[in-house]
Image (cartoon, rainbow, N blue to C red):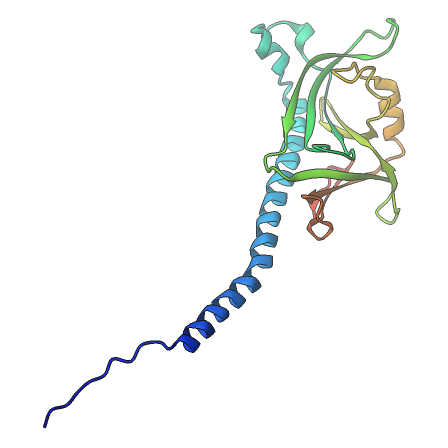
Length: 223
């Protein structure tokens, strides 16, 4: 007796079902992949700001001077900063909130007028993840305080212990690019601010919002 084996392949209907199922599963995975990508980008940027802030406090403790390194004059006492800081801005519009500045200042003698701190060195730093930007800033007197909106934030570390002062950035710098620090005003304003909350978003997506909370007590929390 001869036996015949028949190789039965997919029918057209079965093929349509398999393709539809694959597309359905792919559609379910797209929001997850998008959310994961934005979350990774957000954490990367927030961790860089956090690291730079910790580094600024460490520079204040050690007396490190990029101004002296840039001038190749490490023994010049005039190039040793008295204050270190970061200036962050949250603004509306294209490319806003995607960069911030690191500063080194040196206080002028008390008898000199005006009593500002001279800018020794500054550099513009970009957030490492395209699409991530600083959308809003709130200055708070306590954790329970809902906060006062601000368009910029100045974080100043003071030697020898690296104490952190949190102050609104608007009006603290005499000019924008770069500006000498109005030191008395910045330190006075910082007395009423205990915490600052910085809201970052990815491509302006409301659901991608992440917050960096920092305080004069060196609190640094990513939420």
